[in-house]
Length: 380
Ligand code: FDA
Image 1 (cartoon, rainbow, N blue to C red):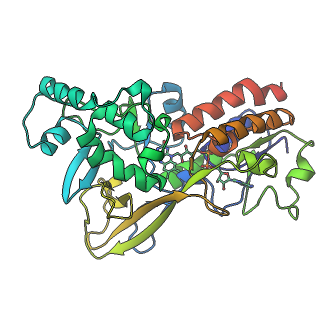
Image 2 (tube, helix red, strand yellow; image 1 turned 45 degrees about the vertical axis):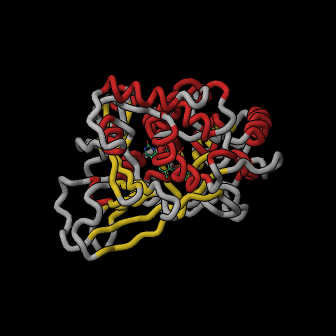
């Protein structure tokens, strides 16, 4: 073995694949019983519908190298993501656009009038001096739209009132003064034609990659544990940064999600893939209905699979999903980065290993760059 990769998410997979293609023997371990990390999907046995096991994953990028790279392993459908929000019994299109504004204000404004209205409502606070998330959001989109689409949704996501959340959590809130309600603006978008599971399996399918599942890097009963291998060979580590150092500087904080899934005896429950729920009275933040990710597939019409998503702070063994990133976290992160520099044979990467939210295309780009600029140099 030339290289150990800990974690088989898109970061670890990309790194392992590049190393394998260059002739290195790679062992890729993951503590879960499947590869692919949070992008993993599988078919629900009852309905045959492909389910994204860790929340909806939409692939989008404007990075042509990443697009070329991922197309080696899968083709993509022409799916374009769109999201709607239910507020007080009415459904609105998101991101906030002219359609949302005219529906909300019961009006038929053109772009110019709508722009003026929102600018006048946004005057209530100055963006630069906003003292909390609420003031920042109002300074960007005005109070009425903020109170309808942002306030309670954000409070549910963070279990905290937006008045108590730091203004920095949002730097911009896009408002489109046209009727374009495509969720992403990227050049390339789509879903893997035969599913994430198949795509991710193909990335690991190389004679130089040995995958070992159900293996925890910190379990000293397995031979490839940290203590045994830390100085013996180069390691790419994509697990949680604070865990690597036994939480020596304290825990970095994360938000987690709870998913409540159900098979319903209807062909179509909500008519779209993701519906947000903006009201406080509804405890979940959104409902995913997975059949709508693949309208081109011949799924059965008698049943559908839905997942309600709830958000909260992570504790103990919860899956870390989104970095909370308080000032305290940032201080700790700096200390962990110093510790990481003290173990030169270990390369920290991915969303957990660097404590930052990364979209899939960002995780892939970052792994491609780590391989080219650093890890491959070890073998040069
Ligand atoms: P990832 O978390 O995928 O993989 C890390 C792997 O390391 C895991 O498999 C874990 O089991 C393993 N591991 C950890 N500790 C270990 C240990 N001690 N021993 C062995 N293995 C260990 N992106 C996007 O582009 N579009 C989208 O729509 C979404 N949607 C989305 C929804 C939700 C709810 C989340 C949380 C995230 C997204 N993402 C996304 C982001 C996407 O999930 C992210 O880009 C990838 O997961 C990043 O891949 P990584 O390899 O960095 O981490």
